[in-house]
Every structure is written in C-alpha cells, then in structure tokens.
Length: 385
Image 1 (cartoon, rainbow, N blue to C red):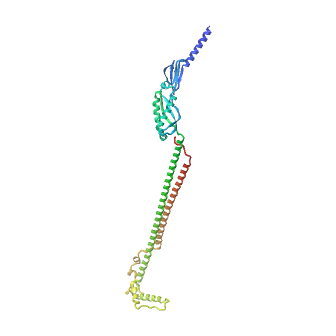
Image 2 (tube, rainbow, N blue to C red):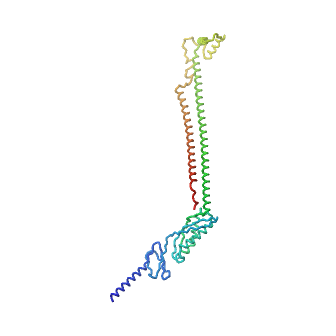
C-alpha cells in the first residue's frame, strides 16, 4: 500500500512539473507576445522569459521586423487610355501588435489588396509618359495613402516601390518606334554638328595656311629687297671711293703730266683699225679742262720733285671714309642669309602644325561617325519601365 502511494505521488509530481514547464514561454528580441487566457486578452509579453497559465492560455507571437509584401502584376488603364501592366513592392512593419491581431484578420492580405486598388487609382489618373518618368512621385503618393489607411491596423507602411511598368501590345510597339526615331534624329544632329565643326576647322586651317604663306612671301621679298639695297649701297660706296682715289691721285699732276697723258691717250686711239683719225683743233683745251676737273694744278713744281700729297689733300682715311673690309662684308651677308633661313623654317613649321591639326580633327570626326553608326546598328531597347 505504501509503495502504491509512493508511486502515485511520484506521478503527480512529474505531472505538475510538466504542467509548469508547459507554461514557460520565451519571446525573441524581434517579437512581442499577446497572452490570451480563456478567450480574454490579458497583456503583452515582452522579449525574454515569460510564464503563463498552462493548458488555459494562448500566446500569439507578433513579428515586429520590416516585412516585404509583393503586390501582384495587374493591368491598368492610364489617363490617355494606354493599357499598362504595373506591379510594386510594399515595405511594412507592425507597430501595434494588439491592433494588427484583433482589428484585422490578416494584415498581410489586407495590405496587399489595399495596395492593388490604390495603385490602380493613382496610375489611372496619370498619363503613360508621367508614369514612366515620375516614379518617385507615384511611390511617395502610394506610401502616404497606404500608411494612413493601415494606421487603424497597427501597421506602418515604410516605403512603396514601383517595380515594373510595361505597356501592352501596340502601345509598346509605338513607343519602341518613337524611341528609335528619336535616337536616329539625335544621331543625325550629332553627325551634322560634327561635319559642321570639321568644315569650320578645315576652312580655318586653309585660312591660316594662306596667311602664313603670304607672310612667308612678304618676308622673303623684304629680305630680298634688303639684300638688293645693301648690294646697291656697297656698289655705290665702291664707285664713290674709286672716284675719291682718282681725285687724290690727280692732285699732284701738272701741265706736263697732263700733256703726257694726252699723248698717251691719242696714241691708244691711233692703235685702232681706223685708217683716218680726225682731232679737233681745240683738243688741247679740252684736255686742259679734263685736267682741271680732275684736280690738276698748274702751279705745282716740276716733274721729278717730291710733293707731299697728305699736306695738300689730307689723309686718305679722312677723304675716303670707312671702307668695309671683305670680312665685314661676309658677316653682313651671312646675317641676311641666316635671317632668311630662320623665317623660312618658322613658316614651314607653322604650316605643318596646321596640317596636323586638320588631320587630327578629321580623324576625330571619322571616329565620331563610326561610334554613331555602331549605336544606330544596335537592337532597339524596350521603353523605360
């Protein structure tokens, strides 16, 4: 009898321990629990260790993390009667577990259904082009409307993103044709602009080449004229100095010397092949006039006496002036030649640089045309979603 009582007590103890353990509830950090006892809500259970009445209690776990809800694709008629397939993604988070459980049967399904109807309403009030290029506006408007509507369910809509906008049938084909035409138009404009710039650069290069060529011709003529001027000056200086030397040498001549020269001149005239030579009667007077013109003096000492020429006419350097020697003339000619060579080299270099620039500009235009042809040859993409 004692053994039976002992076994019964052990069974009861184990049963009580199991019942106690069944009342232990562990709530995770990202959850909150709703404790319901016999169909009546008691309180909210916070993360950590919690004990509830076993057998008569129910704990509902609510996930407080952000959840992603996929809004199914649906066909929407836009304001300009363009059928379009649209879908979206909604990011929600439970902020009031009691409302999320007691105020709505399933807040996931309710939020997705509300997103579909709201998306259809918002997109239906807009034209297709606005939908394609104003997604941020649509996302913001959907979020505000859904957040206000789900506030009664204890759910906060954090963000809404339009995932895809796909026009249907003929609308899509028309948009592709429009996109292709626009790309061709832009390519034609870019090619025309490139050709225009190339023509301008080529004309500018030709202009600069003509200017440099004319400048080179001008400089060449200037240097040539300068050389001729220097040559004429040197010839004139030589003739002038020759006359001065002749006048200096003629100073000490007297009448007898003039007579001797006259006789010598007549002798040379007689050496010609003429059979008859006629001299005028006044030939002697003419010779005397020539002697006076050359500076002959009629009052000089007799022939053979020493005459100090420097005392009579002065030093030769004072009379003739500076006479350039051959070395000075050679240096002057070399300077003129160096200036001409330098000017020619500058003209050639400037012409080559303009040619290189024109060639580079033409190559850039050819590369640009090739890129445009490649871009136009690519398959046409789908319109922007």
